[in-house]
Length: 216
Ligand code: PRP
Image 1 (cartoon, rainbow, N blue to C red):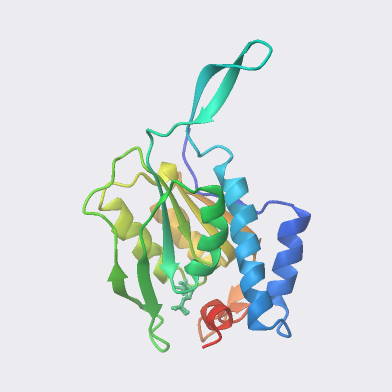
Image 2 (tube, helix red, strand yellow; image 1 turned 90 degrees about the horizontal axis):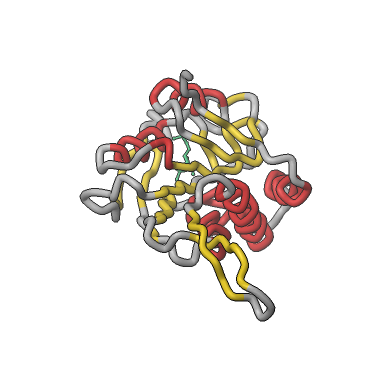
């Protein structure tokens, strides 16, 4: 079977609600931050469904032995927030994945060329090939940043099939690039928007997520 990029937009009222709050230009920073945290939580919940490794065992309930499923502590789980805006989603992800290691990756787009450059890289030299990796970044626009992040990860041994991207708004140019380069990768997004304008902003999008989260 040919692998292809999977993009899920979970039809969940909480995801729709917090997306609406985040999209609204009248939402102040403090509420915008909460909205992104909530989206991080619910999208991570959805992304973890077929991604978090589990192990079957038997536990003794107060009444009888019974089959039970635990999260497998032997399989490494990593969250890679793309700074700055990915930090907003990280908070919600971390509450669901308290044992995950966090590897920060700082990428910023040049405002004219829209090319990303890396100013912080806390990735290890090599990942265990079994590592489940969750990347957080609210926006996939031209796709330059997420492609740079995927290149850094895969050259360190990360398997795209074990990788989940959690974002809020995904745009077609980014999804096309990911699809061509990483079939087998899975994206969880609150929405897919129509277009990216000449300044690199997703339309309708939610503006500059990093600026709105941090108020700077
Ligand atoms: C934004 C966003 C993504 C990137 C998306 O970050 O958070 O990382 O742009 O654009 P692309 O798909 O065209 O690469 P930005 O560079 O504004 O940095 P910030 O998170 O620090 O605000």
